[in-house]
Length: 113
Length: 112
Image 1 (cartoon, each protein chain N blue to C red):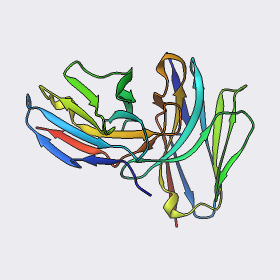
Image 2: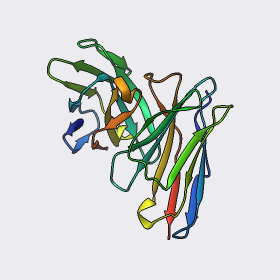
Image 3: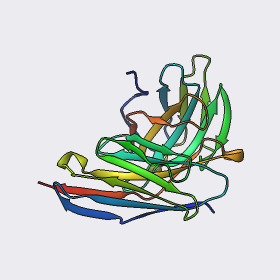
């Protein structure tokens, strides 16, 4: 059965800290890995990673995929209170389940002033 | 930029009633996905449509059905509602299957 595991499950930091969120997967028919940020409403798309070793960056956020280790990390530098959210990792299936997202359980990030 | 639109945003129903949730994808997106998110849980895939045809099916109960129309909007029909159906229902769309999915604001369904 396909599985996506995120760690840590929760994290509390202070503004200005740097955090690293982890996502590991055991899946068949891997196509891509996606990161989303979920505050009180819908998941907001952050990154889609398909190739190993290529870092994607957006402002203070960056992410990279390691296909050999079947994992991905999401880094947030100089955290702000507005970064407080649940960060979801999901794998995008290929093959006959083309397009289906399977999510991990999420990491709850709390950033204190 | 235009986003995914879902309606209604909130819905309260009694057990055994029927509900219809609507999703309007981002313009020029041809693929729609439905997810169910229970309290404290991650989103679970229900069903998807590409070019008006069902493309994949997840853990969707037989009491639920869905379709995608010629204008690419989609509707999720839920019958014989149960208390356990209370959840957030998200619709997401992509420009084609396999591209990044953008989520709508969700419909919060409460079954009493």
